[in-house]
Image 1 (cartoon, one colour):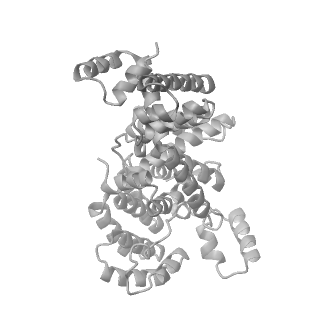
Image 2 (cartoon, rainbow over the protein chains, first blue to last red):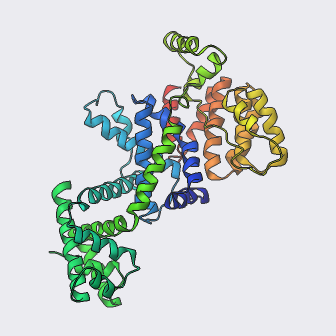
Image 3 (cartoon, rainbow over the protein chains, first blue to last red):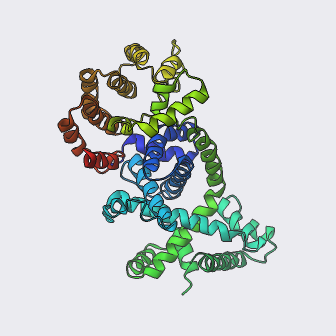
Length: 188
Length: 237
């Protein structure tokens, strides 16, 4: 079960609460830094990993609202370690990294799976952001207006110069299809 | 097949109950459809939260710069051995120390988050920032004395109890530290419990009792943020 204080961290991230953010750094940055330094990394590497891990947790469990049952600190450390192994592999420094340690993870393990899901959501969010600006201005505007939920479809039709609400829905679906196509073209 | 329309109806709750059940049955068998649903859900999340995410990212950048600055990353040995010396001399001393002396296993693993009491007790009549300065600067005798006082006012503050344990451990008062860690490892909230367990093991390590250290390390569960450290240390013992 997620401890109350662990849920508090996730809720705090969702709210972008300054105190909770500071508390997370206070509590866990030392652990990440010392682990990275023992695994051939420096302080800047640790800072990057930490930020990346918090964003991944936000994407999946904060904004994403997926349920999480486990320790926040455990998840944070697992994401950092998982990303660090990836980076070292990319740099072809396999000899430097204790891959045996990575392999010791059970891939069906709860923290490992939770970390994988968080990183996958983060990649999707960043992939979608990269291609969103390639959509037409009309599409960007329409999708943004749809999401705010404050404008009725009739108002949207007027604002976007469309004849009917049906045309608005059709445009929305065309924009989503185009966005998906761009996503796959640029991210696979 | 482009399922944008159906997925949109599913995500916006516009489907009838029967339609929804049918869609969910299809999802169970169709990996492509599941992937399209996941992506479209992520699109919705992106549109709803992109400004919030940018704000969070900026905050993380700012906070990270503070917590990961070189000043914060100082070695504990640096503090203990070089405090009070001129900065240049201290740097030389640090290099000499690291090159010529191997730190003990205890020193390799003993890394404590900074103490923060004032954040929690803004209405306190006493200035606890002095306690923080003492602890964070390695003045453990002063810190222990003041933490005792603090705990008289806030006896249930488990974090303060934990730091008192650390101060006792650093002062070589192994028995007193042991009592604190043991109690917290059994009774505290799960987060504090994880810390207490880890420091309990380090306390044995510092006192030279490797067998007890090993026994406590073996009890640290995989879910603990200290699991990797514990396994690594077990390997070295």
